[in-house]
Structure formats: C-alpha cells, structure tokens
Amino acid sequence: MTHIPARDGGVVDVAVLGGGTAGAVAALLLARAGCSAAVLERRAAPPDFTIGEGLPPTVHPLLDRLRLLNEVRAGPHLPAYANRSAWGGEALRDHDFIRTPYGHGFHLDRAAFDEALLARAARAGAAVHRGVRVTGRPRREGGAWRFSLADGGSVREMAARFVIDATGRAAAFARAAGARRERYDRLVAFWCVLPAADAGDQATLTESFAQGWWYTAGLPGGRRVVALMTDADTSAARAARTAAGFGALLAATRHVHAACGGAAPAEAPAASGAGTARIALPYGDAWLAAGDAALSFDPLSSQGILTAIYSAEKAAAAAYHVLRGSHDALPRYAALLDSIFAGYLHDYPAAYAAERRWPDEPFWRRRASPPHPLVRRAAAARAGA
Image (cartoon, rainbow, N blue to C red; front, side, top):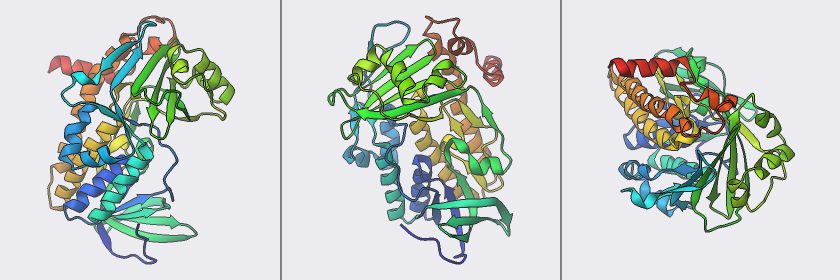
C-alpha cells in the first residue's frame, strides 16, 4: 500500500472515496485504462467481517468480463447452491441454482473479497491510502477537487481532476456536494456471526415473521451470518438491540433458529441501515456516486454487491470519458442507474406481496402497496410509456 506524501504530490486523475467493493473495482478499472487513481479508505485495517456476502449466479458473466471470476473462484469463498425460504407459509421451499445457466452463486468472505479487489487495484497501478479521512468540505479549485486529509496526527493535501463517491450508504461526498438522498423505507438490519451448525449447508435461508424477516447463510471458516430485517420503529427493532432481545427473537423462529443449531449471540448484534435509497442526481461537477452511495437496495432483492460491481464498471468508464472531454458521459451514467432503479421498483412491492399472513402488521402493511410516492411515480411513468 502507498502512503500520502507530506506535501501535495500533484493532481491525480481520479480520487475514489471508499475502498469497498465499488471503490476497489472502479479504481482497478481506471488503473487498467491508464488513469492515475487514488483510493482513500478511512479504515486503517480491513474489518473482521462485512455484512452483504451473497452473490447470485447471475454475477458470473460480469465477473468474467472484468477478469475477476477466476480470482473469486480461487478465494476463500463458498459456493451457494440454492435459496431456501419460508415465505407466505411455514413450509420451506427451495430454489435450486442448478436450474440457472450460470451455475452456483457465492457466499463470500466479504472482507477478504474487498481486500483482494483492493490488492488487484494496487497491482494495476492505483494508489491505495488507508487510515485517511477527508476533513472539512472538499473544494473545487483550478479545475481540480482538493481535499484535506487527516492521516494519523497530520493533515495533508490531495487534488484530483475527478471524484468517485464510493462511501456506501453515507454518500458522504455527494451529500456534501449538495446531492439529495431519497429514502424509500426505514428497513434496518441487526446481524451477528455465529459458529456454523452445519458446515455442509450451502443454501441461503430466508424466513418471514410478523415484523419483518430473517436470513442466514454459511460463511467460510466455519461461521454463519444471521440477520434480522425490520423497520426502525418496530418493537422487534427495539428488542434486537441487545444480545438477549436478539436471541429471544431468533429463538422464536422455526427454520433460522434450527439452521443456527440453537446458538445465540453473546454480544449485542451490529446494526445498519438496509432500506431502499438513492441519490436523486448521482453526479455533479466532475464527480459521480457509485455502489451504495448511488443506489441502495433492500437485501431481499440480492442486488447489492452485483449492482455495486456493475455500477463501478460504468462509473469508471464515465470518469474516463469525462477526463477525455465527453459532455454526455455523466448524463448517460445517470440514465443507466435510473433504468436499474426502475426495474428494481417494478419488483420491489411484488416480492413482499407474496407474504400475506400478517396484513395488519405495520411492516407488511407498508409494503402491501408502493411504500413511497416515488415508487408510485415510477409506476405511473411506466404505465404512460
């Protein structure tokens, strides 16, 4: 990994804010294209675990196109052979990936996956800066964005001709630049990692309940992730903030609790936003947003990592063309994201409508019809097209 010089070392072509999946892929592709790219990652070291570990089988063509498929296959990841769900009834139903033309999906060691992508970006020529934090408001001066960066006890400067915001759901740069983030719901995730009760079970299991739904999946290293999805204002959300409350809710499930072998967390689960959101206009003066910073999906859709990789590919291409004088690369990129989001909105209510056992519960009532005026507006636009 490289270090930021003590003085301004010149202007890089692209500063990529965030070293997660989207940021690492964007930096890798820019470096391959001959651009000078610098990844600014606030964490000094990779996390022990990162939530969001499922890759569907449809990712194979994309990874192959980006020359990343073999690396994923060789990594410390598990194949995912099926989705198993108790949704709309108590019985489990299987959707076996053997019926797809792509084969299996993956249960990733997400932290290792992101680290491998960052390492690939660095080998391709991108500069990866760890443990740095943008302080203050980035400023546009002399045809470049200029950043004050806190690096340990010092503050240093960097300048870039273009910026890709890959800071995740925080969308830190985009919001600082005045972009408006639209939120469609209040879904939150509470999750923990437990020892795997059955190392041979390589299906993702989903189970609905009155106030939301659960999922669990096996992970590399004999571990299992278990997550509760509910709205922030439910009694389940209040209870899940403690280890005892989360454990009691888990014990009340039928299938997920069994898959976890009856295990319970020893500590309070982690919590994070999991709802649908987007940046209304995902670009501005020499910047754009990619990954979760641009579009955030409900985990039920299984689109998170897939869209992060795809949007990073298109974001890198847009930045490359802007740097070479294109005037329509950013509007075209925004139109592409709009089309992705429109397709998602088409399926978003239908996935929840399949569960009808608790029509009077607020969680399900909110999802029985389009949960946000923007969803209704998108539906009206499609009907008039």
